[in-house]
Length: 184
Image (cartoon, rainbow, N blue to C red; front, side, top):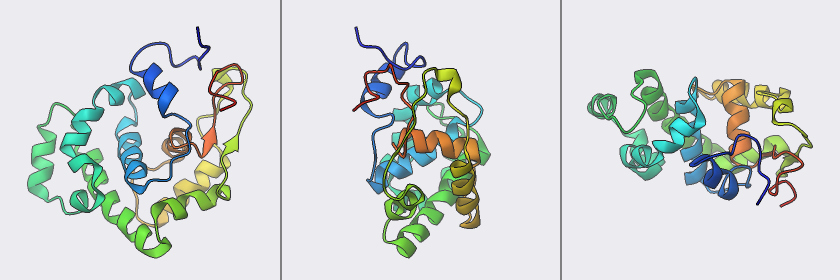
């Protein structure tokens, strides 16, 4: 039996942990997906979001940033009624607004990936935590990313959300040292 990080005890967390969490991600579409999902997760459990991921895919045009950036008030009203996602108007409006800002970053830096990964000099930070309880909820670096994203007009990108985002997309490897994914 594989030893996993303590939070990956049941589905959908196990599959997400084994396949995606902490794996360096450089595809802008996937980065946009995780940005939306991490913003939606604020105040909720990650498994709640994972269980609604397909609903988010359907609701947000398969995470097509250009399509989402063009969403209107009619889209917002439909999304608020969509039981397959978190029906929080602030989070929904944030996803649409962040899509517009995401495109601006792409235009300015060539890609969101290039913008983002420069915060870690294009190399994942590898931590060595022995216990899940030792992993911080935010760091100086996630505070810097949060501040910079906010300067660019992003919302729902506080330091804790940014750190979870950094973990999810592999900018930070926070698999505990006894986890089978730690050394991969």
